[in-house]
Length: 212
Image 1 (cartoon, rainbow, N blue to C red):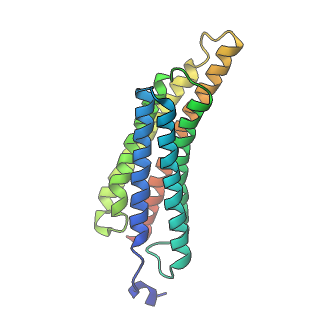
Image 2: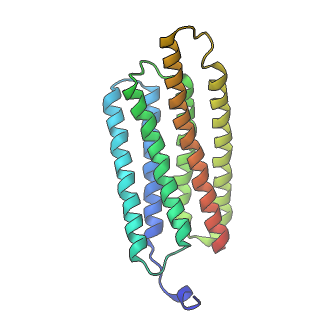
Image 3: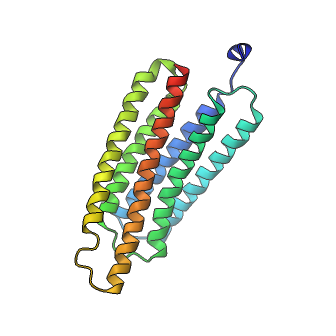
């Protein structure tokens, strides 16, 4: 174990996680664009689906890299967790976009775009901080970014709570009930992405504390 501290570690992990975080940010931006400019829906949803496939590719490469590497930059359990969390983040964003198309949503709830903006902000911070994950001298900077991500998650919770309070107001027929249920499902998926971004930040903080 002592000897392992002096052996070279594979730097590709940090590069892959940085790539995954950038892909998550681009995916969140694409969802914002879809919700705020709700035209050419199928083309925009397909774009988000392609980005989700890109995230899957990066995740597989991290898994393969882990299997091939004897010395890793931080705990294998943390690498596995971070890899899954980043992948799940993009999956939730893609699932929300797919449901918009699948359910034939004619006009998204305004809170959907608000929530997507929250996730986009969180992903921007992740993309900014992830390249620094092995920089011990940047611990405070990364901790500050994680705090901002948590604050945005709190903002997302407030938006989601507003939806839950208002979603079924004035709904008196079955078609209206179905629309409300589907709208609530899509909002929940975007909120899941926000929660997942916070989990990523928490895992990064854990890695920093273990390797400080």
